[in-house]
Amino acid sequence: MTAMDQLYCYGAGFSQPSQIQMPITPSNTSRPVVTNKASTTPLKSLKYDGTEKGDDWVSFLGKFEMYAEMSGLSEEDKRAHLCWAVTGNAARFCHGRVRRNKNISYAELIKCMEKRFNLRKLTETVRIQFQSARQSPGEDLDDWAKRLLSLADKAFGDLPDEFLTSEVITKLCHGCEDKNAGSTAASFRPKSVDEALERIKWQQYNDKGDSQEPNSENCEDVIQVNNVKIDSQQQLVNSIDKLTENVDRNLKTIQSNIGEVQNQVDKNIQAVQSEMRGMERKWKDEMESMKEYNVRNKKRQIKQHLAMLTPIQHAVCGKNVCDASENKNFENKVGNYMEKTSTEEQSKENSIKEQDTREKDQIQPKSASRAKLLKEEGFDKVSLPIQDNKELDSRVDNKRPMLKIPLTTVQPATELTIENPVEHFNVEKTVTDGSERTFTTMQLGNSSLLRLSLELGDTPLVQL
Image (cartoon, rainbow, N blue to C red; front, top):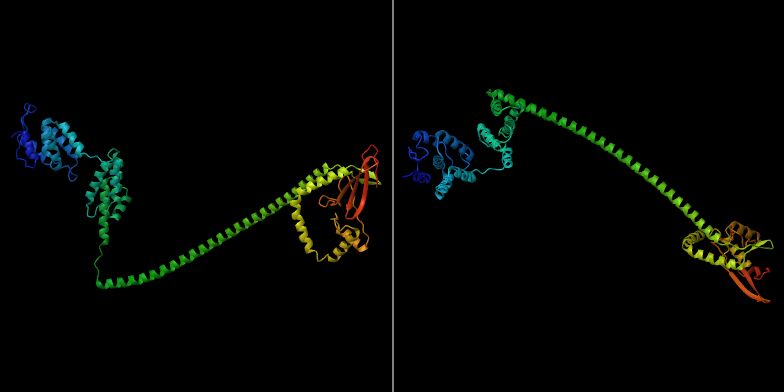
């Protein structure tokens, strides 16, 4: 049976013989043959099955390389001894590679084994496993420390040893099943893993000693129990009193806080109200200023319109008289202006009418006298431009009708305003002696106050 045949048979599950004869190859003919005892004894501890139960691939490969170096094995001998050392899934994979390629080298076989079994996990995954590790129930404290060291080596292998030791000590204390012992040991800030283990074990020993009750007589136990019951009742009463005091104190504090909050709210409300009053006063001032501005603007517009009216002054019997054509233009312009301002004046007239209606009962006797006087004088069909009611009242009482109506001035008089224009205006034209003359009649009702005749020739002729 050749060496490869022995390899296949042993790899298939056959038990190894007690003594194995090394195959004779050109690489080992020049050196003395290693005895069976020296070459086979270390292989008893070099086993790798491809699972996580035993050693991992990195540990196994390191041991195997050290064994091969100490034994002085060649590359072909390393391949053969590697196939003898693996079992289970690893043996099936290794023998399959050799069966498919009998000339495969030891280095190529190692690469294939690393690709298959050296499944390196992400460092972050291993660190998460380390941070979430806890001592299992019933797990020995030393085993717990070894498991942490193994996880830390994988998670923090590329970091300094001081950092790795610090992380292991912290996790060893805080992940311990005995929380009291672990917290107490961590409070001493141990410098090494062994010191942390000693602290935890010492605290566990002290806790066990404290939990043991001393032996005592039954009577003493009874007395002690009674005393404890009495003390517990008194403690309960004291606790209730303290709780009541705390509740009262908290209620007073809450009430004082509520009072402060209420005062603050009242202050805020007063501040808001004062601010609102200030805004209201400011708004009223703005409205008054706007009204004044509108009045001034309206007066300015009226002055502009009146400035456009340039009546011609004529001295007739000591009185100023307007030309007929100028009066016609004045009438047209006043009418246009009244059409523009009719909308605004309508609201004012309505308010005045409402006020007159309310005051109607108070001035009924005087109103009747006024109407009678106006009817006698022929002013019942026109709206007189009278602004002073006291003057008319005196006329009614004295039975002396007096009315001042200036016909024309540079500025319109107060009795003849734009709000109360002359409603009846007649213009008549006649021709006498070949000359065109214009007769203008201004009537208030049925009474003709003035009749003018102006000649358009070179010589003016005024006829009353």
